Amino acid sequence: MITADQLKDVLERAEALHRYLDIDRKRVELEEEELRTQAPDFWDDPARAQEQMKKVKGIEKWIVGYKEVRQAADELQLAFDFYHDDMVTEEEVDDDYRKAITAIENLELMNMLRQKEDPMDCVLKINSGAGGTESQDWAQMLMRMYMRWAEAHGHKVTISNIQEAMRPE
Image 1: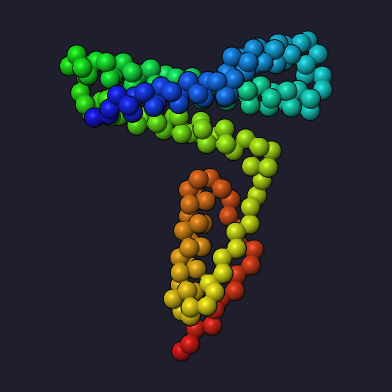
Image 2: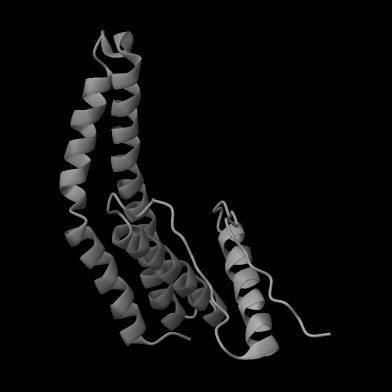
């Protein structure tokens, strides 16, 4: 069962997201950008129209993400209150807590990774170093671990260069 401090933390983090994401300004901005898409000549320039739609979807993503956080935090608050009145079980409160924390952490991560460089590719180099067969085996395990993680999270993985070690026979 969660504590009152954990509930307070969830509610504070949700409110902090509202503040530093400036959700109220984003809602106004979304309305303005959507109005631009309703102009009669909007689709005359398909490249510009596509860029505008991308902008609208980008703003909308933040608002929808925050709505999920707010809804999860509110449901947790209700479940916590109802638990004290014996209307919900401890498992339901804990489940709502997990949902709220997941939603908050996802939005916080999305906020951290919103720089223009963040969606760019990366290069990962793994060297086995000195240590013989064991360090080579460890480097291979590490490479497989990173590749599986990347593929599981929808990233494309390409091995550009690999040097197999010569194993003593």
